[in-house]
Image (tube, rainbow, N blue to C red; front, side):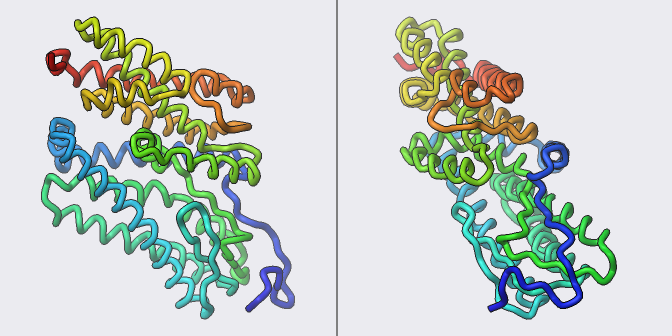
Length: 358
């Protein structure tokens, strides 16, 4: 196997691509990713309106759970399939079997082979273009009730892989005789996770319900060791505060004193980072507030990703999480305001006190 440090005779290394190493450019790509995602959502509304999405919100817990499970499974299978297709492209165009590195639940392929500019561009773009074509075709074929499940995966496909175009752009600007290698170890092309953060910010509370959210500490520790910051913890803070906003909306809108006495303290607890009272005692019980909390967490996480908000430690979320973000306190406060405000407004709009059963 070729050594990762081997360089062909007559060549010298001129640089490495690492989008996260340039905070200004990283934020610009995140912003572009977010704008693209919002534009695609608007296009989906023109295509099929929000009727299937509205029906999902009005459906029962079992239907909603089925759709969320299908979306989560679809995203996971897409991510695995994308990496396998990328490995195949590297193998066919590089002439060598791929090398692999682990990133979270995924195995990321690379290659010790050197590519010409054109071959690198083809290897980088072909998985994205083929997956985009397949998902776009599926949007025409699936029943209307499942349209938004497939379409959200398509949005993630396009928004989450914009960094591919960033890499191809810089490679094609190199001299014609330049050679490129992407080992998956040395060449770190960090994806703009605006869309990915939106999805994970929305699904975080679901993992709390399942009791598996403690595993995220490993992600925090890994990012702290690698970057000096954890970009995951702000997502958790956004999701937690959002559940507090939804619970407060229930407390203020309900006329039942028992509901108020339960919702008010649980809202405060969620804003401090402890969401179980709000989720299990209020939001999940009436369901629609839980959905409002998911959307608020998604919006706050999206903002956190766009501005590159990272925490210097782990273990503290919610209001006191600002102690880990003293280098960006204003951005942290704005993130909490977005999460809390969106979840409060959505819950106020879609939940009715008449839904409280005596």
